[in-house]
Length: 113
Image (cartoon, rainbow, N blue to C red; front, side, top):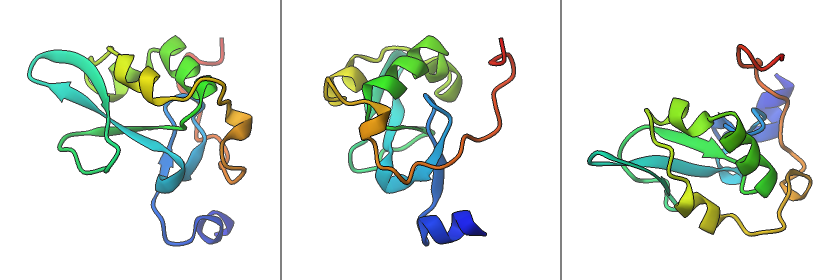
Protein backbone atom coordinates (compact mmCIF):
# COMPACT_ATOMS: atom_id res chain seq x y z
CA UNK A 1 0.00 0.00 0.00
CA UNK A 2 2.88 2.38 0.76
CA UNK A 3 4.26 1.74 -2.76
CA UNK A 4 0.95 2.80 -4.28
CA UNK A 5 1.02 6.04 -2.30
CA UNK A 6 4.66 6.67 -3.14
CA UNK A 7 4.14 6.46 -6.91
CA UNK A 8 0.67 8.01 -7.04
CA UNK A 9 -1.37 6.84 -10.00
CA UNK A 10 1.55 6.22 -12.32
CA UNK A 11 2.27 2.66 -13.45
CA UNK A 12 5.27 1.04 -11.78
CA UNK A 13 7.98 -0.43 -14.02
CA UNK A 14 11.14 -2.42 -13.25
CA UNK A 15 14.56 -1.37 -14.52
CA UNK A 16 16.26 -4.18 -16.47
CA UNK A 17 19.63 -3.04 -15.10
CA UNK A 18 19.30 -2.65 -11.34
CA UNK A 19 15.92 -4.48 -11.05
CA UNK A 20 14.50 -1.66 -8.88
CA UNK A 21 11.00 -0.44 -9.45
CA UNK A 22 10.14 3.11 -10.43
CA UNK A 23 7.45 5.13 -12.13
CA UNK A 24 7.31 5.45 -15.92
CA UNK A 25 8.56 9.02 -15.69
CA UNK A 26 11.78 7.89 -13.96
CA UNK A 27 12.70 5.27 -16.55
CA UNK A 28 13.47 5.22 -20.28
CA UNK A 29 11.44 2.87 -22.50
CA UNK A 30 13.40 0.68 -24.90
CA UNK A 31 12.12 -1.37 -27.84
CA UNK A 32 13.66 -3.77 -30.36
CA UNK A 33 14.02 -2.23 -33.82
CA UNK A 34 12.39 -5.20 -35.57
CA UNK A 35 12.71 -6.26 -39.19
CA UNK A 36 15.40 -8.81 -38.35
CA UNK A 37 17.64 -6.20 -36.73
CA UNK A 38 19.13 -6.76 -33.28
CA UNK A 39 19.25 -3.04 -32.45
CA UNK A 40 17.66 -1.67 -29.28
CA UNK A 41 16.05 1.77 -29.71
CA UNK A 42 15.16 4.42 -27.13
CA UNK A 43 11.43 5.16 -27.32
CA UNK A 44 11.50 8.77 -26.12
CA UNK A 45 7.78 9.36 -26.70
CA UNK A 46 6.87 5.94 -25.23
CA UNK A 47 4.63 5.23 -28.22
CA UNK A 48 6.54 2.79 -30.43
CA UNK A 49 4.91 -0.51 -31.21
CA UNK A 50 6.10 -3.73 -29.67
CA UNK A 51 7.22 -5.03 -26.34
CA UNK A 52 9.08 -2.51 -24.24
CA UNK A 53 11.76 -2.75 -21.57
CA UNK A 54 12.56 -0.08 -19.02
CA UNK A 55 15.91 1.30 -17.83
CA UNK A 56 16.99 4.07 -15.47
CA UNK A 57 18.84 6.71 -17.52
CA UNK A 58 22.18 6.08 -15.80
CA UNK A 59 25.51 4.58 -16.78
CA UNK A 60 25.33 2.25 -13.79
CA UNK A 61 22.02 0.66 -14.83
CA UNK A 62 23.15 0.46 -18.47
CA UNK A 63 26.34 -1.35 -17.43
CA UNK A 64 24.37 -3.75 -15.23
CA UNK A 65 21.89 -4.48 -18.03
CA UNK A 66 24.73 -5.22 -20.47
CA UNK A 67 26.57 -7.38 -17.93
CA UNK A 68 23.42 -9.38 -17.14
CA UNK A 69 22.51 -9.68 -20.86
CA UNK A 70 19.12 -8.22 -19.95
CA UNK A 71 18.44 -6.65 -23.35
CA UNK A 72 18.33 -10.00 -25.15
CA UNK A 73 15.97 -11.51 -22.59
CA UNK A 74 13.65 -8.53 -22.32
CA UNK A 75 13.49 -7.79 -26.04
CA UNK A 76 13.61 -11.19 -27.78
CA UNK A 77 17.25 -11.38 -28.80
CA UNK A 78 17.92 -7.67 -29.37
CA UNK A 79 21.46 -6.88 -28.26
CA UNK A 80 22.66 -3.78 -30.16
CA UNK A 81 22.83 -1.05 -27.52
CA UNK A 82 24.51 1.77 -29.48
CA UNK A 83 21.37 3.97 -29.51
CA UNK A 84 20.87 3.43 -25.77
CA UNK A 85 24.51 4.24 -25.03
CA UNK A 86 24.23 7.50 -27.02
CA UNK A 87 21.08 8.43 -25.08
CA UNK A 88 22.60 7.87 -21.63
CA UNK A 89 24.63 10.91 -20.61
CA UNK A 90 28.16 9.97 -19.52
CA UNK A 91 28.71 10.63 -15.85
CA UNK A 92 25.19 9.72 -14.72
CA UNK A 93 25.00 7.09 -12.03
CA UNK A 94 22.16 5.46 -10.16
CA UNK A 95 22.83 7.74 -7.19
CA UNK A 96 21.88 10.65 -9.46
CA UNK A 97 18.68 8.93 -10.54
CA UNK A 98 15.54 10.08 -8.72
CA UNK A 99 15.65 9.18 -5.03
CA UNK A 100 12.19 7.63 -5.29
CA UNK A 101 13.56 4.53 -7.01
CA UNK A 102 11.81 1.67 -5.31
CA UNK A 103 12.86 -1.59 -3.83
CA UNK A 104 14.31 -4.32 -6.03
CA UNK A 105 11.79 -6.74 -7.41
CA UNK A 106 12.39 -10.43 -6.94
CA UNK A 107 15.95 -11.44 -7.87
CA UNK A 108 16.48 -13.11 -11.19
CA UNK A 109 17.37 -16.78 -11.04
CA UNK A 110 21.10 -17.30 -11.18
CA UNK A 111 21.89 -13.78 -10.01
CA UNK A 112 22.74 -15.03 -6.53
CA UNK A 113 26.15 -16.27 -7.75
